Length: 535
Image (tube, rainbow, N blue to C red; front, side):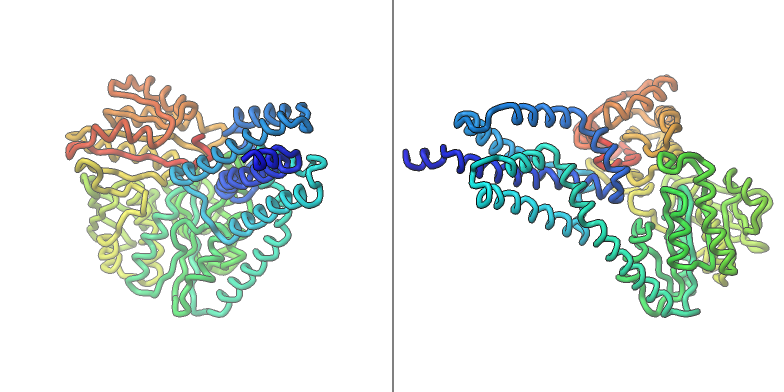
């Protein structure tokens, strides 16, 4: 035992152990940072503000720890022994934190091929630092140990280093995938009709509605889930597009000018549908004009390809732009495609759908007012492609809510859940509050962290959401101490008489509402922000 202790107290051994503990803890801590990088679409410009904004106290503590490490004399045995014990504890805590946060994360790290490559290089880097300390430095100096300490205390630096190191290779891989997707699409020649769908909100719901309608007549394929970025569309084409498809519906998302054009250059749509234009992603677009111009990049591309574009002219911004565009409007005044006689039901809606000179009575399980507008848009395009009014009526009756978008479910204690966790736009969130407001005979609970990525409008939009929530519920649970400020302000301005609670996480929110859940309770989960917004 004495021999083992004597061996462990040697400077070379302590330096080696410190380096290993730091390198491994840095590897564990980098997983959380890769999660944030992934949630920010691998853009360092968006990732870095997230690092500072979500972990200011942690960064300051890391700086203080590094300064303490730097000023103390590492050659002193007692100092080195103390640091060895501290780094071992730090390693254990890092591992526990990593496991717990991934289990409890709203959106855990997805181990895509790119993430696996980055983690593999991170592991190689950690092993290399340890080997250099043990076999090259041989405990005579601690430069390599200092590198390991930096990796442990500032894992975001490692993430940025690995990102920059792999960037050229990732660009080559991206080009290869893009080229392959274009080859697959070109192989269809004229056998495939490509439809592009974009909008500030409503595009995923409209995509699924359109797919249901067109499937009454055509073999239809649509981008799955929220695959609406260039690489998401590339993956959908390469991995899922069947060779016998007749129609390809491509959802097109955007966070900056030129994003829609990039997608159009990839898939070359001959039909387009613009669902809406509004204040969305203003933190990256800068202003509303840029948002409108970007959405109409679909119009420019479709017209260049000799096709037609359908657009929601009930939307003021689209209506203003339509004056200078040759598009087919729907839902707006004077349009040949619209719905009237709308009747709201607790579990759906009834309405009359007008398609040119034809009109059909429809019933849908979809809950929101804007769902009817989305149905009208999809019906207008489907009707123009030869789908009959009767087939459209049948398709409407089959429609199911998109997952986590005003999805009605049975929940704990026999309660009713309105799952709108994936909704994150101002108008949709207000409408979701109105939907729960229809359940007047039940206890109504709203759980929300509010809205993000709205730039200068974010505070006011959250105040408005707080007011609407207060008007339509009995219990309001706000997630996030700082994020709840405008929501709480709106609720107070609406003279909310119910119970208002602010919590730090959805887990805490569940501890509040779970005891209240009975068959006479209805809950609304409104937006479910990724972890990079909630810390």
